[in-house]
Length: 130
Image (cartoon, rainbow, N blue to C red; front, side, top):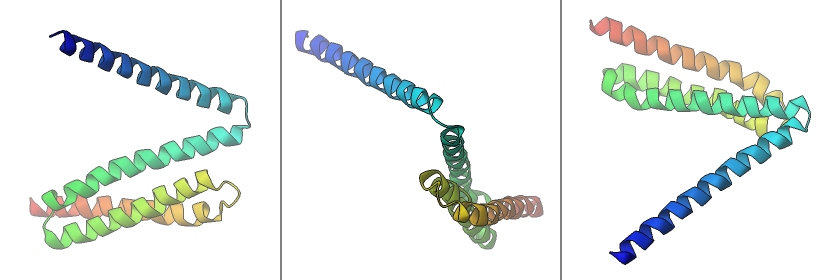
């Protein structure tokens, strides 16, 4: 019983320490960004946009096989995959390589178009089943 309570105290202490480290890292990052050029904040915003779109469309990609009949699920899934790679991938690349924005400006719109087409195929397939 004594060992168990000691174990719980040490786990709580470890969790508290990890939370404090996480807060410290975030505070340092935002302090660093405030002290630097607006360009850094723009790059962080692009990274956040990429991760948001990546997450939402990855969830949609996982749901497509359950929602759509086979030929439509392959088309929509391929478009979602191409869109995630094209749109989010180019934003990730642009955030990591700010000196070379050419890839971002050329590929992101094509990736965004693929995502829109994926949603249209998904919606059309669901409506056609009704």
